[in-house]
Length: 213
Image (cartoon, rainbow, N blue to C red; front, side, top):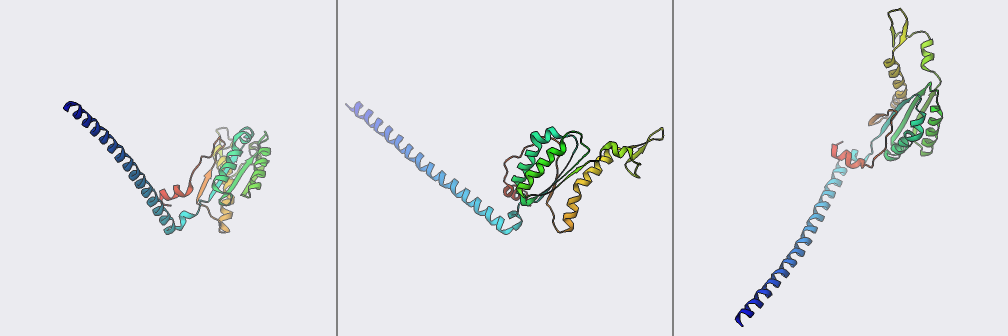
């Protein structure tokens, strides 16, 4: 009889202990949730205070996008044009200027860039799309300039590739200087190559704040 009572008391105590543990677990979960909420709310308040103390964080970055092209119709129509439009949308049309310089393509790169020009016009973004008929062969047939040419062992002068490409790059950047003269400046210059790219999801405010810009 005594052993049965002892067993019953142990079972009762065991159930009571389990219930107490469950109650403590629930209480601790509530406390932990409240702590997390408090920490998140405090971090948000501190971040907003940082933005108020630094007005520059409220402004999205202004980006000058430049690129040069030659015989790139396939990549332009398949991916590149879409990538540029996506990038403009991500940064905001008011914060971007797009400058593209194309010259001497014998495929339909000009047609592809006209399509890009139309898409950018719909977005209302500042832009300059230059389609030049001058080819590399035209420059070679012309008289050598003072710079950018090299004299070969046989006395013939030939156009050097790197100075030639640098000249095209500078032509794509010309609008940047003209805009600066009118008081329009940019935080970044982004030079895009003729490669496939895509725009990821980002938060410019958080990115700039983490860098202290």
